[in-house]
Image (cartoon, rainbow, N blue to C red; front, top):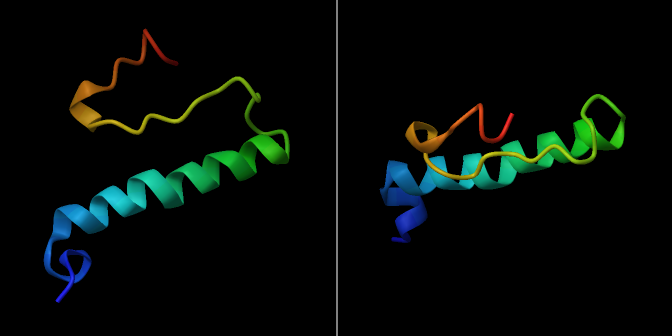
Length: 53
């Protein structure tokens, strides 16, 4: 079987990098978020809100 079905961490990476990225892109497209905003694609523990609001 593929790792995608066996490992929970793989699913979490897919969700964070694809689904959340696409959602942020849609919010930018409809004007809810400014175009210069960026999503955080690293570990949550590495997020620094002061450095990247």
